[in-house]
Length: 111
Picture (cartoon, rainbow, N blue to C red):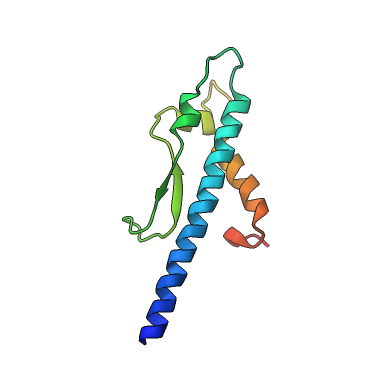
């Protein structure tokens, strides 16, 4: 690879990383808003779940992926997202991802 094409490749990777970070941040913020809108109004603020959402870089992970993820360390988040046999699901992360994806036609394999 020539020096110019290496520089272009590096700049492109940096820009793509910035874009995926911004999309992930948009998903995180939207998910936090969904959590707050779904929660019991009698519970005090702040929301541990909404506050626990964070954007992390997936670049160089074990699966060789690039980009960013939205994660939480709270163990009960999966039960809120997917429900249990005794509790209905209240999807916040997948709903946020769908809403944000709608803003970016053609991203994620969508027309």
